[in-house]
Length: 319
Image 1 (cartoon, one colour):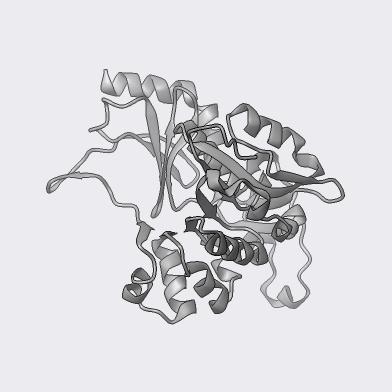
Image 2 (cartoon, one colour):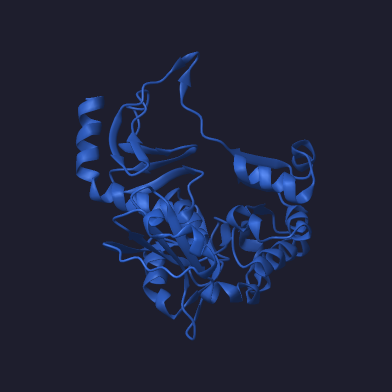
């Protein structure tokens, strides 16, 4: 998996590989929910639209590392339906020799329906992800690994992979993210032990403090580098930079920052405290602060659909 002849060391990313099934319901969920019948809930929603998009945390991170020119590899499990996904990642420059296909189960899948009020009903099927703990860094040429990323995955796998990195002397990033709700206090503390970098957004750090009973100061003292993602509007000194709205779709606002005309064409997407940036010349995620993977896939689809309009608006605004 790791090329011992290459001078460039590899970032090995562990985490989920998934498909996201995104559906739109042309009404309000609340209109078909009867409050005094909640103890016997049985509802079905006929949706108008469904999109299947590539998801999962490990491919998302590895793909963006490859875009930045890094040698990136995925160490993850997927189901029989993921062969096309694996081949696409390989074509995009990601090492997928550590992406193990289990032919007797499906790839992890996220099913979400969104109504006209942006309320969501979702289900997550673990599928092959539940077998991620069977993978081991010991199967790799570890001297060629620059860094490992422990991202949201089967909880047992996250614990096992962090433990292996410590034992083998592999520096690792701990990014528990969506799995903080599932991980126990002991599992979180073990994941922090020996981590070089801890990543989380403001809300996730609140969960960390609550579940570990550690203050923010105590958390910061345990890891050399802590990256806390918090969206702030751009400013130049005391002046807030103009952000013209180019497009609105649902809760997503698509905008430019008026001081970025010297960069490649791109678009910023804002929803509440979450913010992402997508390149437009070749649609790809440039940065993300807070959006979960399934929303990033949804937003990427919107950007691709409106790409011509967004580029035209960029050229008109920045001349």
